[in-house]
Amino acid sequence: MYICVCKAVTDKAIRQLVADGACSMRELKQCLGVGSQCGKCTSAAQEQLNRSLSEQMRIPCQVLEQRPAA
Ligand code: FES
Image 1 (cartoon, rainbow, N blue to C red):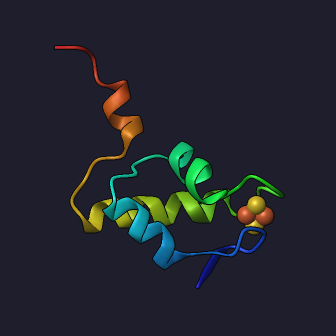
Image 2: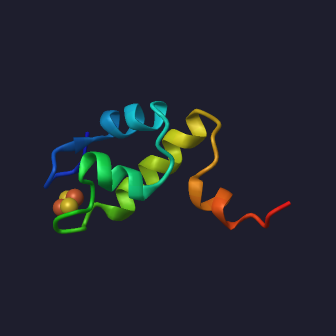
């Protein structure tokens, strides 16, 4: 299923990028161009990112960045 129509990015492409180590919307934008044109896909891409991370039992980068230093 297409998540970003402007850049022809599918849910499968996002899952693969997450499997390759991506964990933030910034990385999806840099690597796939998600949200870089009209921006209408941003929330769907964020949902797919979160779903892909949880499938792999990983934590979104934003959560890691917000943690206080130990
Ligand atoms: S649908 Fe993703 S930038 Fe337009």
